[in-house]
Length: 113
Length: 113
Image (cartoon, rainbow over all chains, first blue to last red):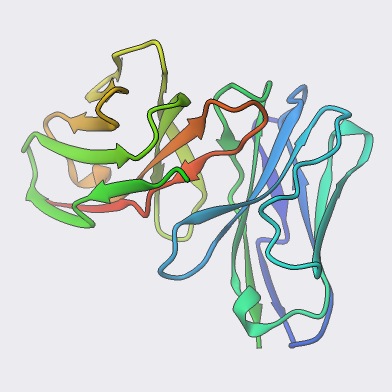
């Protein structure tokens, strides 16, 4: 595709429910990143995938958060037992390799009621 | 721990003015620095990427400089236009392999006609 795409664009859920957020990176990009942007906060790194290497999960805030990347392309970020503090915009980015320019998707706005 | 600071947090200027946005970082061991633009409710658009070995990059009315030793970068916008109104984010990529971007909290620019 022409750019990074994310779905859904908006997600409203009830506290305690699980949610899945999807990211389609730019074709051919080996590196994929998930970030979170909370109201009043800057963007914070969550998790990073590079090719077939083990992901860097150092930014995940709790064990309720997990992510996978299937076939080196599409990635899914899963949040289990959502809490109100999980409300944020979740942004995905990809780059052709780990040191290169990162291109961002439009984000998924998650609201936990 | 790398920290990125952007000053000012907000800036209002009349159309036609030249302006400078500032970014500082605490650890000079960076791989590159990237400037982004974010419109309300949207994802990030990459503006300029400066590698650690470079001093500046230019794109149209935008010029970004990098002084790695002093931990500073500036984004210069010439002849500002109302369409430049957005939040501008600075992000550094640490020199360690496999690390994600560390973002400042941004400068929100408003250009009045």
